[in-house]
Length: 88
Image (cartoon, rainbow, N blue to C red; front, side, top):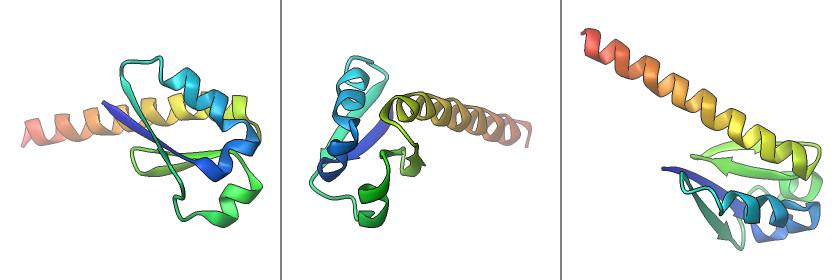
């Protein structure tokens, strides 16, 4: 399960629609907070935390795509690490 976190104060960038779309994916747990402590980023751009890593975009639609890209990259890194550990 992947965790994607959103700041309620960032919703003016359209991230509320991204959040709603992600909630339909059973592989993703969506969490909404009042504040994620990234106020400068929150004010400037759509962003989310994907498994604790910040993902920033210029538009909400781009954020949606970048969230899935981040998930794919994190899964690939985990698979590579798991393989390395298996080989030890």
